[in-house]
Amino acid sequence: MDLDKLEITVLVDMLAQYTSFYTKMITDPASENEVAIYKLKIKAIQAEIDLRKRTAANTSTTDPDIVLPDQ
Image 1 (cartoon, rainbow, N blue to C red):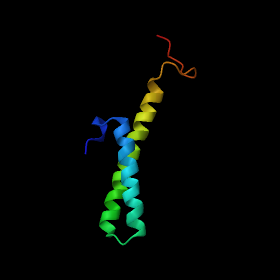
Image 2 (cartoon, helix red, strand yellow):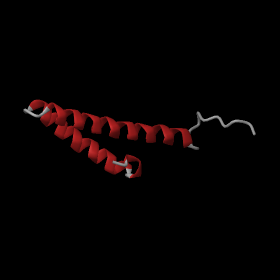
Image 3 (tube, rainbow, N blue to C red):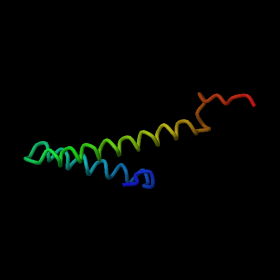
């Protein structure tokens, strides 16, 4: 799955959906493999969202705390 090609809104929707599935699986009988797969999917989506947040924070030109190097 190419998470980097998806819009952030799609990622957030996927995260909500996978989290819901995961929660149901850990409360109802489910195979350990299925639970592990959804846990990995959730972690991958979270990592992509975090990466985008860090990237956006580092490229913001409106942040008063950003100090640009002298050229």
